[in-house]
Structure formats: C-alpha cells, structure tokens
Image (tube, rainbow, N blue to C red; front, top):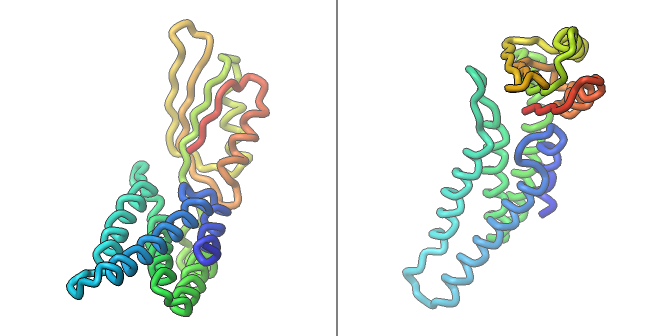
Length: 208
C-alpha cells in the first residue's frame, strides 16, 4: 500500500484522473490476486496448476483501466504517463504478493524518480510538457463586455487561446462560450475555475 501510494501521491499532486486512491487500490488488488493465485495452486495439490493465470488476467484488466485515463483533444494526447503509472503499480502489487519486497521497493523508487526528476529533464532539455491543453465552458449573463473580461482573465493566467465557440440560450438569458487554451503547468485547472468564478456575471464554469 505504501509503495503504491508514493506513485499515487505524485499523480494526485498533478491533478491527474487516476490519483492516490486509484493507485493504492490497484496495488492492493494486484497483491491480493497474486496471493490468491499462489494459494489456489498450493491448496489444489495439482502439479499442473498455473499460479500465473490470475496474474496474467490482472495485466489484461489493468490495460482497460489505463485506457480509461487516456484521452485525445485535437492533436494532443494526454494520460499516457498516468496509464503507465497504473500499469507499473499493478506490477508492484503482484511482486509484493509474491513476496519479492526488494524488487518492489526498487521499482517504486525508479518509477517515482521517472515521474518527478525525468519530468524536469524533459522540460529543460527537450522543452516538453511546459504547457497543457484545457477546454473551458463558461455560462454567463449576456453583459456587453463579458467575453472581453473572460478573455482578459485567461490572458492574465498566461493562457494561449486556440479556439472559441459561442452559443446562446433559446430565451437569450444566458450565453455559453467554449474556449480551448493552453496553460503553464503551474496554473492548475482549479485556479482557472476559481479565478473565472470571481467575475460577477458568471453562472457556470467547467474546465477539463
């Protein structure tokens, strides 16, 4: 649980879809499945029993769980690192279930290092991952300069706006603007939402 939590904490800190709880549950489940596999093989007394069968299905199942964290917006693919971290967490759980504690600890250390230190290397040497893409949906009262204030607020958050779409309600009481923009990683989606919520005419904010 502790080993998997270390990886989960790093993902949680970056507000990824699979965070602390997901990684802990994946690790605990994988560990239990591995222990069940060994117990079934031992208790059955059948020399042909394959203790790796359940573990193999764990790997397959984790593939579906990891796929759920990957999404595509335009030409940007996100979630691959989180999916890989879930896969590694499952492997750590299987190792702990086998009683291989040293390989589990070493793998955890290497995975945590990859998620933290190598991220800085990518940014410094390759300029990768400096910004992330987000879609912001604003529902607001149709004031004269509302859209100007929204865009200026995003610019103040160092947003690079790439696309804007407008729509109005049937009765004209509200307007909806969908904005696709990129932000520096130090500006979180939560900060974006909270900043936009301070605008007096704003009714609903969604950011993903």
